[in-house]
Image (tube, rainbow, N blue to C red):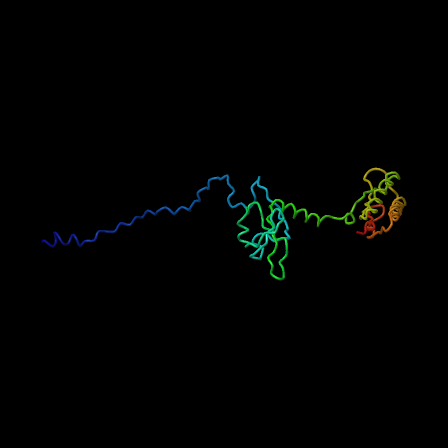
Length: 234
């Protein structure tokens, strides 16, 4: 009787309840909007208002580019100072505004190079002036272009030919471009041929002039004559 009252109820298994309600499917992860920033994160372009200097091609060695550990420095008065280490010289001036510049090549015997302490602004101006002088065209390298129409009158032709002769006498190249007008009188083929002949005659009046390239185009349509003056001896 005691078994039925106390032990048997404990051994009985209660039924397992199964929840038949399906859980809702997982929601996709939503990105949180990034707050707008007035900054320019990850931008590689310069901000407006900042000046970007054009690179300058240098022909001299600056600062740590100087290979020698011992240098001779010329001071502002032009006097050559005793030998110093490059390290000590670089510590002696404001490197934000000045450079240590090697002004003499390395000696084969191993003597220290001569250097100067120069302002960055003056160095930039000097290098740009040097590059500009190297790329500057001489008068004989300059090409001038004159435009004429086939029906040009004699007075206008005379003025253009005068300018052409002046350029050729300076040793310049001259391109004479001939074309017809969309409106106005059209020149005949005979008139166009006469214009070409007159231009060549006036060009030949200048000593040493040559037609360095064959005429491009067609007489009466679009044509270009190429003349070159005699280069001045230097």
